Amino acid sequence: QVHLVESGGDLVQAGGSLRLSCAASGINIGAMGWYRQAPGKQRELVAAITRGGSINYADYVKGRFTVSRDHAKNTLYLQMNSLSPGDTAVYYCYAERGQVVPRRYWGQGTQVTVSS
Image 1 (cartoon, helix red, strand yellow):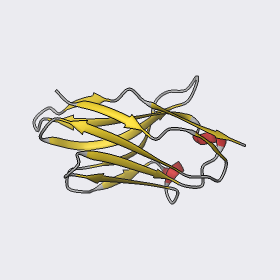
Image 2 (cartoon, one colour):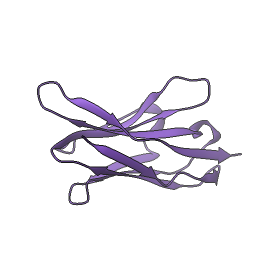
Image 3 (cartoon, one colour):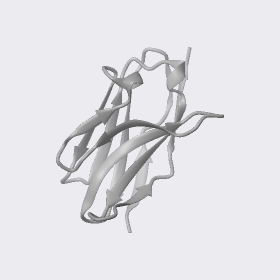
Image 4 (cartoon, helix red, strand yellow):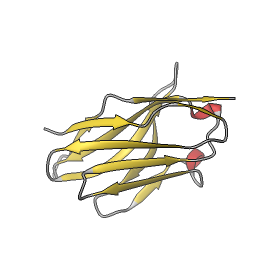
């Protein structure tokens, strides 16, 4: 079992920055990443990072968001800069475990609200 706890969501003005954290409990965690879901929209990928450090970003966050992970702390981060109202959403982190058929675990989400 993997348990994920996100933190760092807040209300921020457009142009501001936030840093989200996702603390994971469990061992042998593989890929981790962030999704977000805005009201009335489907959940969409924000960024993902493999255990080896390969990173994938959604086009709409490239150059603004940075994903990283601290293996020693089993924690995933998302540094978000130049935020706009379009970034308003609940942000969810996930972690995968298992090699043949990885299982994905989700956190409870953290609200990010960007005011104009």
